[in-house]
Amino acid sequence: MVKPKRINPRQNNPFEKSKAKIESISELVKFSFKYLTDENPKFLYNEHDGIYFLKLIERLKSISTMKISEFRQGGSKSLRAHPIDWQKTSEDGFGLPDENQLAEEAYQFALSSNEYGRVHGFLIQNRFYIVWLDKDHKLYSGR
Image (cartoon, rainbow, N blue to C red; front, top):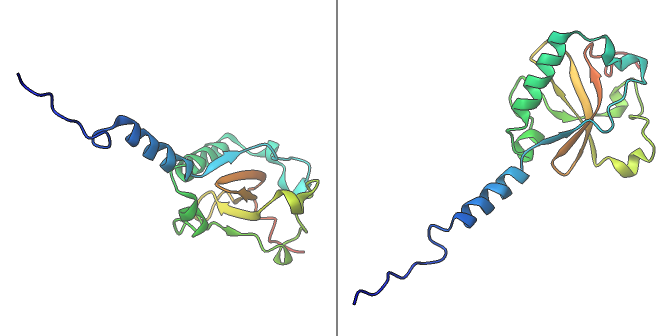
């Protein structure tokens, strides 16, 4: 009689691979449009053309493959992701109710190296909440 081979439960366990994959995915940047607003006249996105929105989708897709730690470190040279320094901007904040309790950190990133402006929002853990689409770089122009 042949004894059945003993299998190590940790070896070749498909659930371990799935768990690692889920943990890895949970570190990736996610996006929310929950706070996207078109109320500030500087950041009206309804006037942008289709090419702008294609660039936006391409950038969001690209960033969504990054870990939040990579994003916080600025990502690629063309991404230029960094916190917003409100003292150097034309605004005092996003103007959201209870903003100081809501937003962990105001952040921005570029859509491309020189064109199409910036996306402004805030981070909570690994989720970037988009608030303004700033095609014409108006946040840092004039105070």
